Image (cartoon, rainbow, N blue to C red; front, top):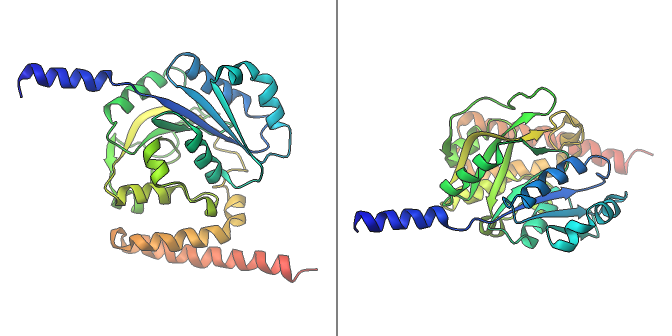
Length: 284
């Protein structure tokens, strides 16, 4: 292959079209979702993203009505696609539905109370172009109130399945996922969370994941309704027992300390699951 041919191939790869869809699940968020939605719509209006897909996960407040009235022009133009689920299925089911309805080659999963860091999106787009062979790119987040990086600093790198199993990501990250990969390895909706299991399945199948140093998302780190809050974890105990049991299939990549942690968590969440069972069925 001549130098001219190599340059032509490289130029074609850089110029290849890249389509992005932002997917935002919403559940009873009528009072807090607008900053997030407007931030995502700015990406659509600027041509960086193709669309914003909002998935209402069976809200019982006026979230759907708010979206239909305040963003009617965006809906009619196709810039905002509203998907309404009749029954609340959890955030993972909502994200899967959004990915299925999206038209972009890549999915940016944005929460309904977070927004994009001003000035970082163009750099994010460049990094996605540079790593189009990856299944997932994780971008860093900063605390909305403190304007500080969430988690420990780490250099940009490809994450191995051993790293993901034993160390996870360094704090909360914004996932940008290739649509074909998430359709092949959807989030486990039956666990109402546990999205890391999908990322492990991608890595186990030979796909790659890139961790960026770039801070892209303003994250509401103190929200008590997060799945990762202590209250949220206790409520999800039955699902977390199953989550940790599923992790055991990757035992050969885990350290002794990681295996011990899985076993301890299985016991801990089993205790809380039993507590919930007794409260539901024995307490009068």
